[in-house]
Length: 82
Image 1 (tube, one colour):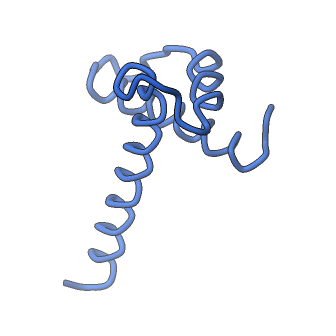
Image 2 (tube, rainbow, N blue to C red):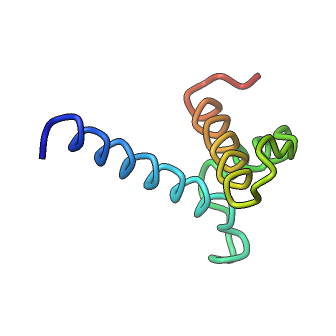
Image 3 (spheres, helix red, strand yellow):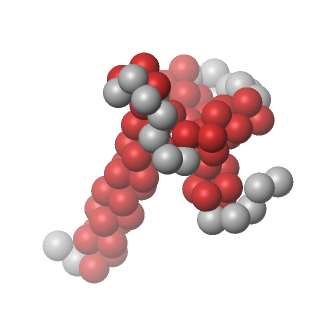
């Protein structure tokens, strides 16, 4: 494999991992019965992210929506609380 392919696969892997961590934190009250640290950021990200389906293809729109929530989640954890 060339470097571009390897880099693309690594970025996809890290993105999926980050989205999975966000989702686990967001769903922790129903899955684990308790809130994980950082749950407040997932709650705020979910409340501030509007459902706006740009493509009309539900799986793609859902992925974009969840990705936007995850970006807001990590921004809030990094200190940007706006």
